[in-house]
View (tube, rainbow, N blue to C red):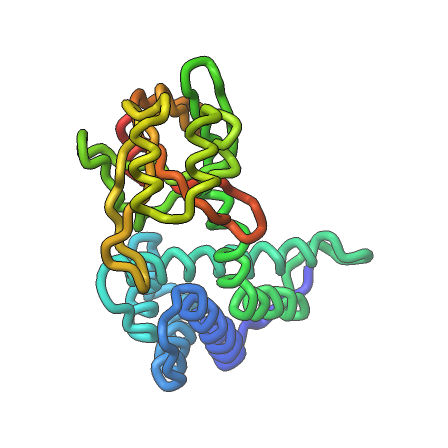
Length: 291
């Protein structure tokens, strides 16, 4: 059996580079302003800590709880997150990227044709490349792909016996309230719920451009008892009014649960809510916890 010698200087250098890259990528993913000197200090501390693991007399400092505490200290030293939430997020990214780097290194080691399956410094570039890729593209991927998928839910709206089904996007900034019941309001595209609306209501909404005349005409429609005027504020418009209609039922599919809500108001939005058409409704977070 071959005898492998581990050199402290090589251990320090490798861990310095890897810790620097992992801290850098974690900072990029967390949206934290990066300062090179802090990253270098944190990485150097990580390199020294890895060297200590070569000495059996220091084994007490390498128990799992102390390793976790030390890694959290590294994150704080290198990134200085503002507040507990940012610190927690940075730590989660640090651990996730660390596992990704280790996993990609091991995968290449075992899957490479002719590989012996033994870990070697030769395979470290795989870990380095995976960290750099996460640092440069990870945040964009999370924002464009992962987070939107997590925040989208299938939603069914029912008026009498008519039902339409589509995608709702969780909008934590949706603070619209029904002025009568003070319950949250779901915002839906007009084109999405158009087929559920009575003809006289559609004719008013499509045929009158004057807001005052439109409100008067809406009061004479067959759904006058369902109508609501929802105050809203947006950029360039401080005292807007959104026309809403009271639904009979809304069902939100959240995982294995179907959250049912009776008599919620649907705010009708005339334009597109999503440029790519991926969702047709904005749902307030409240209705996910009040099923």
